[in-house]
Length: 134
Image 1 (tube, rainbow, N blue to C red):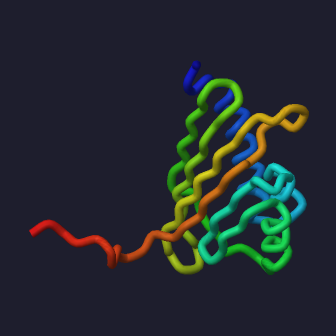
Image 2 (cartoon, rainbow, N blue to C red):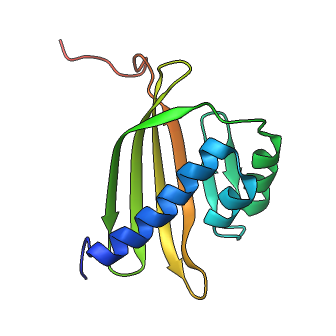
């Protein structure tokens, strides 16, 4: 297995960039097209847990606009020719909060790379479940 083939990284980055442009423009059609249109697709967001493309589409339809954000760090790893993970650390322009977003992409026959799983979160000030060592 070839890890981090530059051509595969470039393909995943193109999907990543297209998605980021669609978030900024609140372009639901492009956001939808970036995801695998399948009931097995998963998206965990800041306030939502979505199983299946129909739940993801319903959520997207409810969004008036997304909070503006600026990328702080992008990290992409490719595993062979058909799997890639993208990781984004961003900062919201409106609140200054730091967010993280991970997408798992798979190359699907006749479709190219599609997001099959995504997770979005905001960095909490502290983890109340973590106990520091004495």
